[in-house]
Image (cartoon, rainbow, N blue to C red; front, side, top):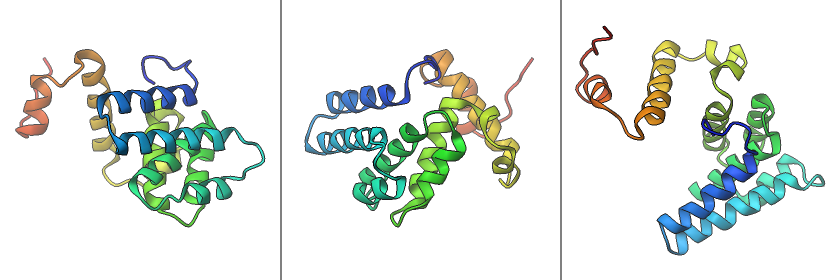
Length: 162
């Protein structure tokens, strides 16, 4: 998402589902792939409300909650607020669905797209924003985390920024 912001959300999830079955072959990965594809299909069905779609997805198991988050993201495309509203308004694990939806949409849109009141109510928001920046920079620059990451997060030591 960060490298290809013009890519449609649904295409990102289709690719992720296909990759998952290649990297982790087996029945569980196929189940997740089918659920993700179903979530995308539901999101494109204009006759379904978010409540109906999320109810049909179940959103009680981990796999179903992931599918619920995918549904919420595809349904809302690039609207953070709409995605979170869809994610929380059902009878399944709405907290889990909303947390994953928020993570996906935050990665997609960046912190500047988040309505301010979401960040204002977070304890230690500066620390969380720093961690998010470090993850984005570390993953983008190195494909893995470097010695500064290890020193800062694994060893708990300050990093020299000179």
